[in-house]
Amino acid sequence: MPTWDKLASFNRDYAKLGDDERAAFNKAIRKFVEDLRAGGAFRASLRVKKMTDAGEIWEMTWANDGRATFEYGDEVAPGERHIIWRRIGTHTIFTNP
Image 1 (cartoon, helix red, strand yellow):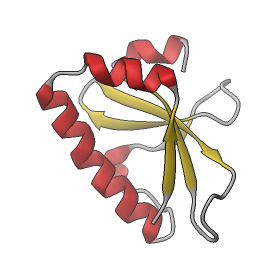
Image 2: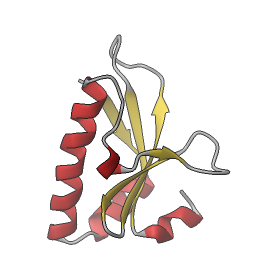
Image 3: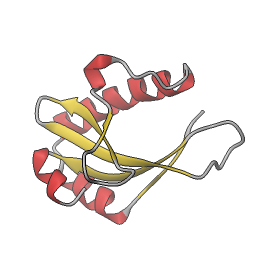
Image 4: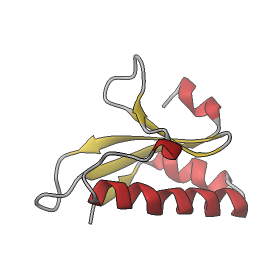
């Protein structure tokens, strides 16, 4: 099972989401975790990709205008990917991912 942490910026952003947005994100996370468990080839609907000009930050789509950014951290559990969630919201998060 992948491990994860959240930055304070992610927690602040998440608190601003509505119930429907949280449900959509949680649904996408279940798919994200399934794909990580299967080897990390993410399904096309999540549109996981490395951000341009943002170092090691990645983005994921969880709704029509719903985005989340993350980075891979050092392994916490042997053999498992560690995800650090950075931001969540609309495309506006890309100004400071």
